[in-house]
Amino acid sequence: MKNVPFYNLKVTGGFWAERQKTVAEKTVWAVYDRFKETGRIETMDCKPHAVKPHIFWGSDVVKWMEGAAYILEQGEDARLRAAVDEIIKMIEVATTEDGYYNSYFNSPDHEGKRFTDRDKHELYSLGHMIEAAVALSHLGDDRLLKVCEKNVALVDRIFRQEDSAGFTTPGHEEIELALVRLWKATGEEKYLELAEFFVRKRGTSPKDVPVYRKDDGSGIQSHRPMMEQTTAEGHAVRATYLYSAVADLALALKDEELKELAEALFEDIYERKMYITGGIGSGHQGERFTVPYHLPNRNAYAETCAALGLAIFARRMYQMEPDGRYGDAAERALYNGMISGLSLEGDSFFYTNPLEMDLSYEKIPMGYSPNMERQKVFGCSCCPPNLTRVVPSIGDFVYTYDEKYLYVHQYIATEGSVDGGEVRMETAYPADGRVKIFCTGKKLALRKPAWCTEMVTDAAYTEKKGYLYFETEAVEIEFVMKPVFYTASDAVHEDAGRVALMRGPIVYCIESKDQPKRVFQCRVDADAPVKETGETYGGFPVLEAAGALAVAQKALYIPYKAAEKEPCTLRFIPYYTFANRGADDMQVWILKK
Ligand code: FUB
Ligand code: ZN
Image (tube, rainbow, N blue to C red; front, side, top):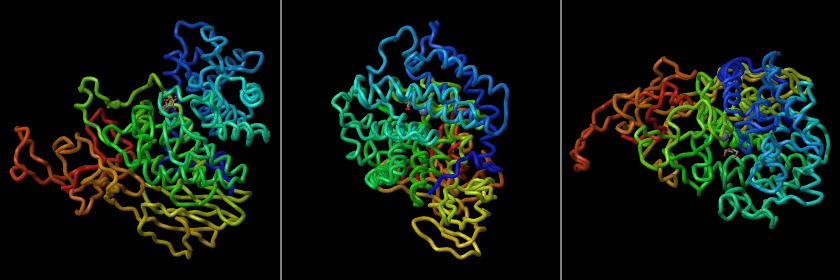
């Protein structure tokens, strides 16, 4: 199967068109301005400055550049082009004779220390620079690509040929998937070989001691040889970047063992370690996967980058083989646990994406509390520029194709070209479940959304592994969308006795400001019908459900029979919009009445 790159498609309307507009007009500049204010941009020149670069500040900046390049694909913007140009020039000048660039190690304080410390994110930062370079080269600007190719030649010599670095594989993965992109962009086999080297060597080298988390190495996916790592472990962003590279290599090398490994890793996440929002990495210590079914709501870490990581891993899986679970995981993450990281206004962010907020938690001395309010920038600001990369390139998630079929994995209004033919999808999904698709020269294979229990179409189809196969070039279908309460597996102890509301792929939540009392007093009647109010928020209907309020009692403890409840109506908004009207208590999983 081949991918249809977003370059061939235009997003013509709906949720993502609106988010793309916000990111292009607002977010990209909000992130740039914060990076300028904090010194991230100026330290790209590696000269002495009052402010000292953090180990991966450079990665923040090149991720921003990658997003800027995607925005420039949509149309020229002289100011954006100039901002990108300035950074490229700084990198060119600061690159050493032997091809090395890193804003931390090329700065005067850290000279001579390169490639000695596995946890200093050098190869991670280079990976992101490669991704930015590939994006810029598509615009016809190869300057950064040249820098990267020299840099990669150095890495290849030091790591693969001489084995002379202080470690064998990176502490934070990213270069692996970036090298696959570089191979695709240049056709140079050596980049694919280096990607394979880093993946296969993982967990095998005595030099790769688990210094980082002082654990068994699982925190950075180094506890055993890669081919024996069949469960998702450790830091969730690192893990999903690595697993994405495993899937990339499986596809590029047509390697069955790598494919089986990627499948096992995906299954472990999908069946046991993923929030209903597509958030992953529940543990805040180590930003990591913990144990199966440990999905706490209030303490959920669920980093924005990790949901994005799941989405890009799942996308690679469906590029390999159509299986509805992959598209479902990507859809959950994109519409919920990832995009919740971006405010409706587009200029503030969440790093963690809990499924419950209790404002009083901020006051607990020495306790863990997530950010209750969206932030303009973080000390560790990886998430905002990741959003500026993924939203403009969202078209990458929509289609793949083979000789016979166009596979439709995500329902996003788009028009463009596929394999010499024309493709067009008209839909307001997921505000509305009606979809019209047409592609010249291809039959259509449509993912049946996991949430869908009722479809309406006149066309005949056969169903296999979550896809509907039509023998026609045009299809009209409705995935009937209505609010549904979900329950979690018994194994998820935190959700016992609770339900969560979804409408199509959109997870809903309640905030105290919309309820008669704080959300912790709210109980919901999961058997009563849910009403669409006629209002919308964040592009989706505001929903109402019948419930009951536990009447506040003064005494700390009273007999259960004496506790009073009064009927009420609960008002639900899309989860991804939480805390857009200021910090508030919030719940996704609500106690049943
Ligand atoms: O370490 C670089 C980035 O910062 C990671 O990907 C995020 O999880 C955050 O730790
Ligand atoms: Zn992040």
